[in-house]
Image (cartoon, rainbow, N blue to C red; front, side):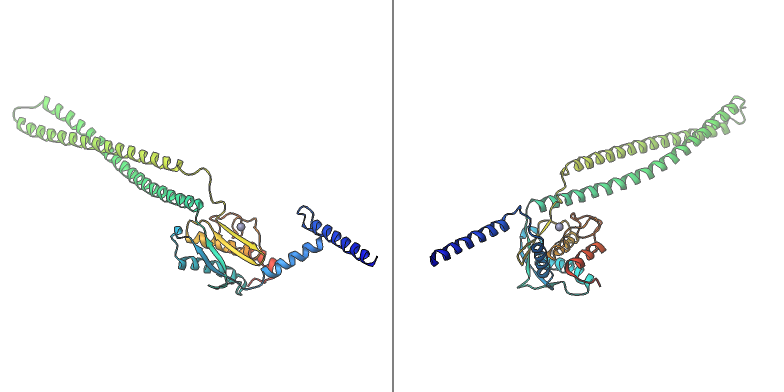
Length: 311
Ligand SMILES: [Zn+2]
């Protein structure tokens, strides 16, 4: 009887613990608030145990980045947080630090293609701008010369008319003077003719130059249309936290400055901070040109998460 009771008791105990366990394990069942708060506090406690040490882990050689460059970028990124709070939030530790890995895939290829395309476009643009400026300058000069030519031509026509009037009433005595004058007029005509040809040649040259610039603009636009339709800036870095284990992975960066910003962003996640709404803040979900330093939003997010006072 006693044995039976004990067996029944243990069976019941097993069943109750089974119910409890399945109830807790089921993902869709909400976590009791007390437990949730406890979990939050625990996460906060171990995520905010400072300093957090880091090291460079696997560095795919396809990045063409030296270990020193990677470390330097991470040091600068860590320093942003350290300086914001005036304490060592992140510390370099080549042995025990959490790994910062560099994983090479199509994201980096796309970013590099984009960067190359942008450099080529810039080269085109500066060439086009320079040529257009030069063209404008030459065009203005040609117009000046054409105006001057028209004036000279008018003057010549007036001088010819005057000469012809004079020649009508010429006497034998001043015939030789008139002949000299006619020779001078002939010479002037030749000069004007030459000038006209020169100006025409110049104009044609400018038209050719304009055509060349137009072709270059067309080439530039064709190049622009090769740009991938979708911007692959999506996910360039990742911070994984499993238990107390952190891992940072960098997938892509255009410049060392971008790399440093991405690392600063992932360091923020390493503290358990999520994304902010302001595009200028480093913890914004997407890397962009407005970002450079940590903003008030970034610093507030961390001080809230880790009870840290900004410097
Ligand atoms: Zn993020």
